[in-house]
Amino acid sequence: MMTKLIHVAIVIIFSFQICISQTISINEYSRVQLNGVEHGVFIKSNNITNPILLILHGGPGFSDFYFWQTHNKDLEQNYTVVTYDQRGAGLSYSETIPPESMTFEQLELDALRLIKILNERFKKSKIFLVGYSAGTITGINLVKRYPSLFYAYVSVGQVTNLYLNEKISLSYSIQQAKLKKDSTALAQLQELIKRYPSRTKNELQDLYLSRKWLRHFHGDFCKNTSVEQLYKNMDTFAKEYYNDSLIAKGQSFTMEAMWNEVMKVDLFETVKELEIPVFFYRRQMRLQCSIHAGI
Image (cartoon, rainbow, N blue to C red; front, side, top):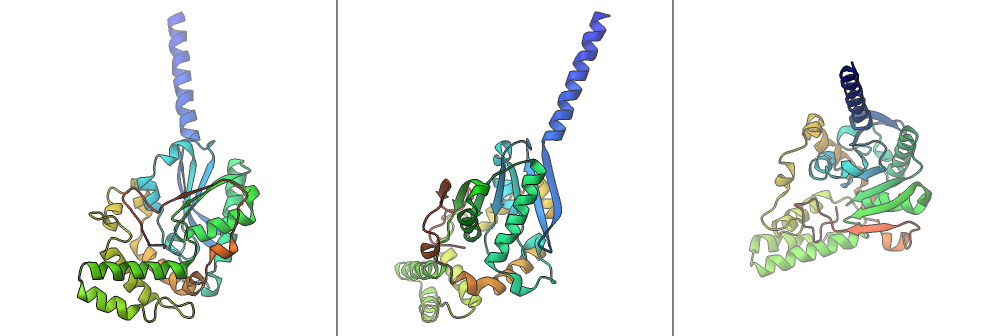
């Protein structure tokens, strides 16, 4: 009889442990309304009682939830990791979004709304915030204006002055073209530098040409690495929602709508101090080794 009771007790305890483990972990994708626009939001964690870590992607408009979920899964052990496509990007792209709503101010308001939803759901008062590349523009402005909402800000490839960034990138490519005696690259880049960068008009074709040669000369990826390697062994859950067509549409839409504002960003002037702990990292996602690319 005693043996049976012990056996029953062990079964109950084991079942309880399984139940607990099932309820504290999360692997979720949902559609969330943020200021009138439906956003694609991922929440992943081994334990939902862990602190919230919200990640702001770059671009602007470049959906990268699949990179974070694939190459940074260790974060899910210690945080409730939230990745989402910002307004107009990837899974949050829609033809009904007004181009005039695509501003950094609006992206901040959307992020604030999401933070409020997360805090209420998980019963938190503060979160950790990560900004990546162009996402650091929204990120650093959020922690400047609302420091009480955050434990700390982690910046990966912090943007400062995009106009200056483009000048440095272009100069680097020209220098490399001269060193390698690449006459084709040099001819295109020397023509490009006559008109680019400029703060007065949208110049996306010039941007893409500059990026083409920057990548060719390993200015954003280390030698023997490539962006294609980042797509290998994609997280199974993220892969279910990966949509190359939507990502391309969202990036094109966002860049067209926001590039003029992007080129006017100068955080040297607008953000001179912050009230919370800040950690700066070079732009990298394990394979990436950025030198000059700011977006």
